[in-house]
Length: 285
Image (cartoon, rainbow, N blue to C red; front, side, top):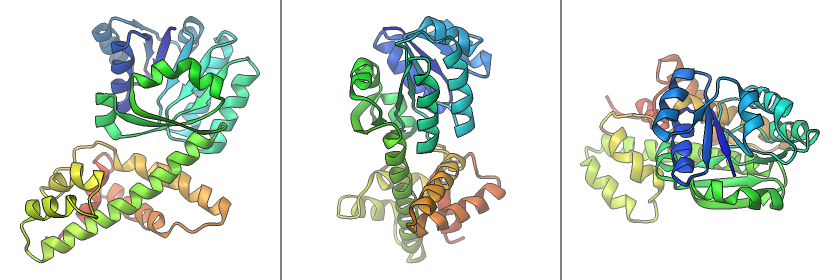
């Protein structure tokens, strides 16, 4: 099984390295060719300058790009040259409708499709411990399971095409609420002049403990916002969630508040920081 990776951003690079470690990666493509060339040399795989050429030469195409329009553009190029029986795995975060459109484009060419967004951030991509939420046919998933296992600690087949992206939307709504709760609580602790590191250690071991507090609590209170998950990307995802919520007729007030907060932070130049930069709006100066 020969796999090719399209999109070598912070997440894609980690995924590609782990697939290569499993002996399954043979090709990479990135819009910035120099980045692809550097990684290809490191991993001893081929670098491609055209998506269509890569798609013709592999059995499995993995995508990790930023936006719905990017996914559809890449899928359109893949569909031109991919052999029947090829499988495309989209690991981007986009809408369920985009996933369904992509699957329909590829189905006309007898190419399989999975929407397989991930959770776990840059650390998870680097360490091969991602949680993968999969939408699509069971037989397609089973055919590529070894590739997904190389990147993940957990693979959950949620249901038909679009289900993976809908589940990722659940994840992003939940992350917004957790971000709000943790940053608010730590600002509360700061206002009471508590020793912040000790407070974090104390609450992390109890009912309020969570991944975000464990991995971002001490960095945020020290004004360190190195991105694990860029604020601007979560903002993009939450706008997708807002649209889905409006279509379903369900309120998501914490997410709406977070969108507004992120807009302020992006306007102030913090879009490329970690989502824990929300603490900038909560902390006491």
